[in-house]
Every structure is written in structure tokens, then in C-alpha cells.
Image (cartoon, rainbow, N blue to C red):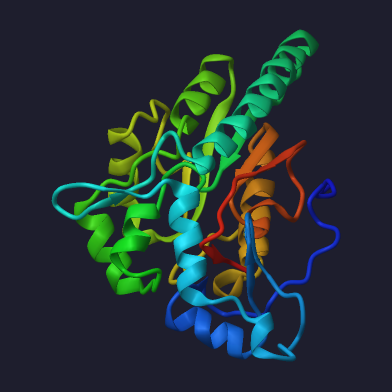
Length: 276
């Protein structure tokens, strides 16, 4: 039975069909009254802004995001997040709590001698792989074409410390699964990236799930029309049907975490975009 999600209460969710991003996409969202940015995700405070003073200045929002990530520019103009930034500090705090929880949960599972094997599930973008450099390159204006071009030739850095946390959980007996909204055509690039930045866990098709709209798996009854929540919770349900018990689920979007099939959820910070 699906377990209630601990982050579910008290949110208004803008009805956006694509990522609500800075740049043109965000301007459109703001005009529609759907986005005011805060740490963690974009939310809606009013259905329609009453005055211009209720709309955040786009340049100032970008500057705050860069400061939060500790924007670092290399000699060739590449942007990277700093390991000394407030973002990195926040991530480390979440990871410390997750490590403590996982050590106890996995030890409990081992003592109980359960037939089901413990597992953790993780999203990819901004949960295990950091998109910051890509976001700066495209001016916070995501397109499928620019994402393909970037992923084909460039490895994203790991979210600070997440590769170590994942490998630690694997060493403690957890099976590791990735569920991402990236499309199936990006599989080879995604797996290459995870390997290259230190995720030393199985990365075959039984452990890495990407969204396949052309040939959706039979276990997703919503088929090619799944919402993010339906796709991700349905895939977690499928994983548990294979004999696993998901002790933790990590994601940077609330839609990564809703829908149950995990004992505990961990919300990673992401002020850059919102996925419904």
C-alpha cells in the first residue's frame, strides 16, 4: 500500500506543462501568476499578481541563485557551483541526516532477516547530477535540444557528496535504483555520466529507469500519458513488486517524492525550476 508522503501538505502547485525556468519561460509563468521563487521549488502565492511589486525582479533572482550556488567561472567561461557555497552546505546537512537514517534502517533490516531486500531510489538531475553548469550555459532557458547537445558531450558534476552517500548505502546492503524524467534516448549519456563521476553501483536497465513515451512499460497503466508522480510512483511500485523494500527516496522535486512506495523521502534543494 502506498505510504503517505511527508512533504505533501501546504503547497500550491502551478499547472505548467514544462519546466518553470528563469528566462522567457519564467516571464510567461510570472505573467500568468504562477511562479514566485523560493529555496527548494517554485511556488504560487497568488493566482494573479495584484501589482508589479509582487513579481520578483528576474535579474535579482538570477543573482541570488548564483550567490547561493557560489558561482565559480573558469578561464574558459564555464560556470560551476562551489563546494563552499550555501547550496553545498545545505546538501551536506541533508546527506548527514540521510546517512544516519540509512545506517539505522539498513541495520534494522539486516537484523530482521526480511525476505525483501532494502533499496533506495534517486532522481538524477539535481539529485545525483548537478545541472548548474548547463543552466548557466543556456541562461536558465531549458530546451530538449540544448539538453541533448550538452549531455551527449559533457558530464555533469555529482551533487556534492551524493556519490559517496550512494556508494555507502550500497556497501551497507542497499540496492540502488535511479528513476529519472530524462528520455530513453539519453540513457547511454546518463549512464556514462554517472559512472564517470563516481557512482560505483550497477547501472544497467534493471537499475536505471528513464521515461519511454514511445514504448512505455506494461506496469505503468497510464502509458505514455503518465504525470511525473504517476510515472515515478508507478516505477517505485514496480521495483517493490520485484522483492525490494524502498527505505528511502531522494528527489529535488516534490513530484519525485509523492505517491508513496518509500519509507522516507529526502528533498534536495533546487531553486532553479519546478517540475509538476
